Image (cartoon, rainbow, N blue to C red; front, side):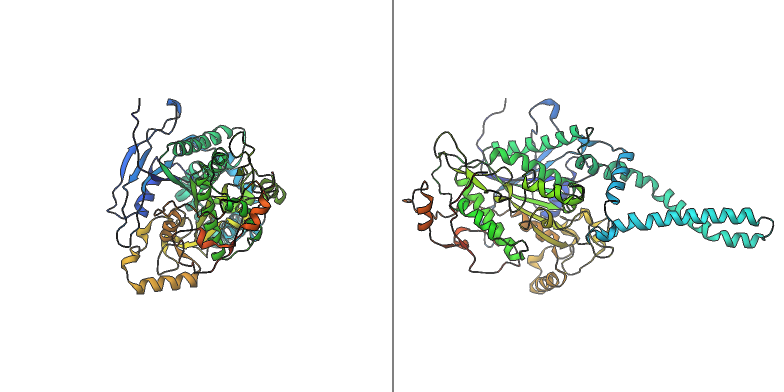
Length: 543
């Protein structure tokens, strides 16, 4: 029996690994090495993931950093616990036949020239170059065979060799490729490429593994929310792990979204959020997205002050196939995609407004009409930030890409690179870049604070010229580990009765967003602005 202890307040970061036969804690250890200084000390402790012996995984550990007091330019930092959601063992080794069938079905959905720039080259390779090479080899084989049969009695050996030389060269090249790379390709199909179809496709034989993966993630989120000492939770999903992350967040959100009906804290941001979403641009600038994320975070703080238990402030995706959800998840069917969001099966960012984002909860005690966000409004209070290596020639990560065009313009998409002062380096090549999102030591100028103004200025110049930013700096910004919980200011005068929303609306003054939100700068592209005005929207129609 565990002894009850008192814990200091802390924050938690969950890392969800990507596809392939990963080893437990491998992704988390690499992540910590790539995002923290070499002299940073971590403590590895066991943690119980499940509630029964059957779903325990004793290979998993919790890594913790110590609390940091404010010193000089360094702000205070909460103690941080890092967890890995490990799920590879639920899938095991894949079925080669099913995998090839899935690749074939997705390859023929649309011609390569109709795909976006992230996957156009890959699709061209699958749709054009490989088939053409095979057809050429078959044609040369038939031609060479016919030539030999017809010319055995008429042609000299030298002529026969010359005629059949192209076929011999192509055959030798194909044989070399098959012998050299065939076994590796088969292993890749069985151990890596087989994962997406088994998670994306709800085939009856995949359902159990899909449910076990989600159950493991939901169980971990439950434990963190119910622990009582976490101030916030950050979920980081890499590759296919980002799809797992979206699933566990949307399924867990419904349990922790409700406020405490007994709370007397004001809900001014909840009432004005619908208007903010209506006014938000469908093609926002970087500054607009950052302002929207500030509003999301302020609303999360208000929700926490009102007693809501939801702790996840940030969802971070790296090299995410959700960028291709239109054909990987929604079968290239625009109607199915639209219905999935309008029917609130999947959350969008900003949330689907429909008949309202917040509605009276109809509770049995306290403030029976306390406002609660609907079951798909996860991204009313949780920020979604996404990083990807743009594909340019033979460089980039075709697995990732922009997520905002599919899941909503509130997603913050950031194009990244590895090197501070160079646009393309060998580590960014196709097939390599996908696993390089968090390794700061690939950048010789990773210790940017000690490099001087020349390096900083050169980096900013390349940022603007290439429209990319350095990956490890972006990730640090996304994580926001220097987070401090601050309650938003109360804008509703206490004498105003919230049961009379019309009078409350007349009494509310316009207050600049910067007066509501006290946050650290989250981007070098941020700029000082007078900001929009936070105006109360009192209507809260039922959903």
